[in-house]
Image (spheres, rainbow, N blue to C red):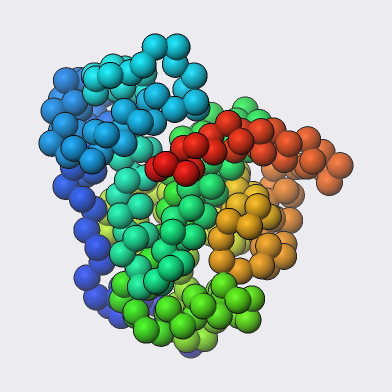
Length: 282
């Protein structure tokens, strides 16, 4: 019998909390009356996050002519939406690094980041108005793997090694071993963090975008395509062909003809090449 959401959360116990600074930034980003100075004061209390934001503001992705030297300049350069993405990315990176997956921790994080960047590039190529949401969904799409690595260190580490070696299918193996998979765990985590429903849906359905709510199917499809691109570029655990079903669903949802896919892929690869230093340094 399938596990219920209530049983899932009960089995997981306490989920990792959203860092305090991240929670404050998300609150300010959602408040139309908040100011740049309020955002600066909150972020400046976290020196590592401040450094990360300055690094990203000066990255090739934004093509700045002059160096961005202050946090206020960085906030003005990036805007509230991108600042929110960077803050969630930093929180996600910390959680990815806590999973009990040994040497594969960095692979999980890099896969999440490349998926996010590739998904965003697809969204831009399609002129989607939800580019940042796609980026956030991509960052979080496999966060459930890290939570499972934290909660079930020995069993999940063994499973990850099997997936990494190509001996097991991720979703099927997780369901067989635990009764739930990483998409369900990620969904539970994001709900506990009070993150937007669009992110929750992208995380829950990135392997099955056709089952996402109608309003978020295209967003989830972009995340699925980003996931495929990351795997095709050998950034991640498992075999690229294991994503064939979700990729086909994504293409159908976005009305992409097989002959048109290559053109979009070239745009995405070009974007990833532009941002490769960010992938390396984040």
